[in-house]
Length: 419
Image (cartoon, rainbow, N blue to C red; front, side, top):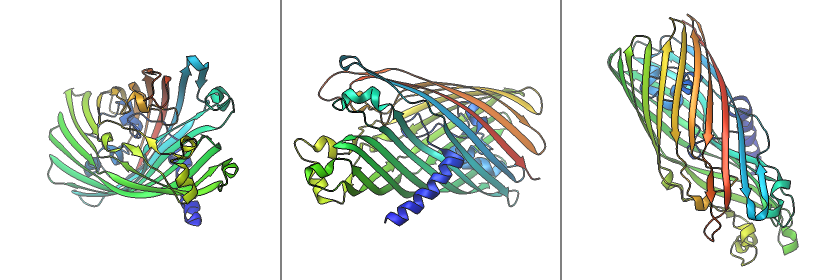
């Protein structure tokens, strides 16, 4: 199993470095989209997307492709997180890091009605890296590594069909490849590293009754993912057990449903509104299973269970996102864009923690783009302003204190049309 996991981790790591990186999201474990044109409009593109963002938002948009094209999207996430627990004198910040992300898409019409394509992108990702010195009062004045990462790379072959001039449908088969790493205090330093796969699909429809009005629907099937790997507990040998065990986690990428409308009150101006619903309620926890029987017994030990019971309790709730976007054409080649999204957190205060940070955001976006006969270039900037979450000191709270995060996300997308 280790050789298979190493090979899979190598493939995922290369994809994460080249396309996706380590990512910090809003909306639970989901990122807020891909493609600079979509990002500039706050992701309100389900009704009209026709660029690399269609693999994420609505594959039906490929049916309206004007020729064969290939597109590369690159973005960088610059997060700034804080955690404070005044009674313990803790005032911590995430380490300054730049997290690259991206997507690659290819679309080719086979006829006036049928289009195929292939996309590689990141639908989900979360994580944080903290300074152990600033958190050592949580671990008997010992400085440990506090770090987490959960990322998913999706390989998505696509087919889209234009039923009529007004109606288009499309779908992708989603091969989701996941990776999860955690470092935190235990009996000494605890670490785990896992990989896994799951298969899902995205189905979409676009209805365009006129040049000025369009509607869209998009649906992502839930995906069950089994992650396997190895765990280490630095000082477990002091308890008479091994310091390593194989580990399994089973989790779910939940169902997602989006709807959107786009309209043009004037020839140069497009306005769009989307609403997205994610079934996070299904993700009540991320359980853990150890192959080492001694580790399993210690998960229920009255003293050491806090170190060995590594199940991640979530108790999340379903969430609605609201997105608004605008695009104004300065001329035939140049466009400017604005967007806004209200992004709630699925996490209750009781399960808030610094390794899977869940903060409600107000997201503001701005973008611009150039579209020529062959080459197009789009750029955007997202600014996610977090709302401070105050978790009270109580027996039910997993990590009391004040949690917050702000994220800046610049991006660029380059596309080339072959004909």
